[in-house]
Image 1: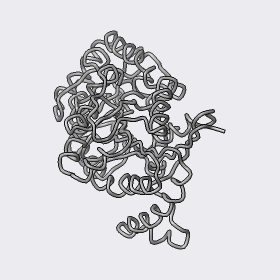
Image 2: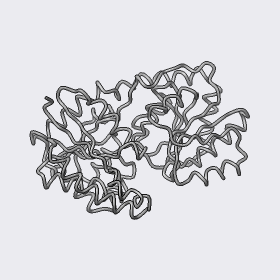
Image 3: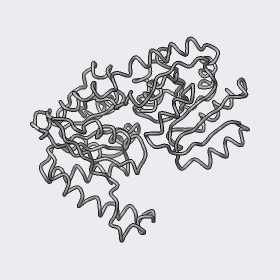
Image 4: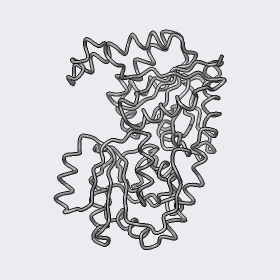
Length: 376
């Protein structure tokens, strides 16, 4: 029998996004482990069958979810040795992590809060509830040096453990020739500013008329982005919609350059997946991206909202395919830091530490080691 039972409180893959994907990868990685028995406690549990019709109504769905989620927490956290709570920001923080932390405290269970939102500077600055709650958990884990720095500004200790990438799922391939087949895998929501990606692509297509852009993802801005693509007169723009995690590797494999333009971000797994697939990456320098992309060495960075700079970087890669390949090779070499053998020991140390009540008191500021920052 494993030594530790760990409850992962996180969205299931029914809510397809970065948190759900990382939680699923962590669960799969722990499967069969001799020390850790990890199981999912979904923040989006299926409602009772007679009430599923009601769950399709927007606000009724939220109320019904909370009524289902609360009893589930008490039932599932009671058998855990450690409660590992995934966390986003704003309303999501109040609806999912906050109740999980409260129930874990009621049951006397240690809490590892895995905060993952690039909106942390604004969220923590605005919310006293969030700051106080986060400061009082047994251990805070963040996936990037960017978030560690944000937490440090608010006097909150954190440990960096990077996101996981399954290198066996993604196949590294050198692009020869390097073709103007661009890919973005960000959801079509405001903070990812896909509109700037379209603008940059328009400038690229001015030089490379046969260039293509595939947008993988969905979101509230899809209709507006489709209109924008039409107004810009863009050709060969494919709105591919949502892809399952087991389909995403094929999207990277069939393209040559990865392009994204978020305004707010943390540690996007999409960048690491592009590295693992051999795509040179062009991105804005939002949030934690400079912590995982060394500009000019592992990819190219541009200021947020600067479509001209993004397009210029893409054109430089197309004009200099040997250099583009050098960037891709260097980026791929660093992917080992995000594989399960590298990450497992870090999670195990955290779980054992909180289970044994050996973590530092939450009220005490413990600065994250620079070595950990560099590793992320």
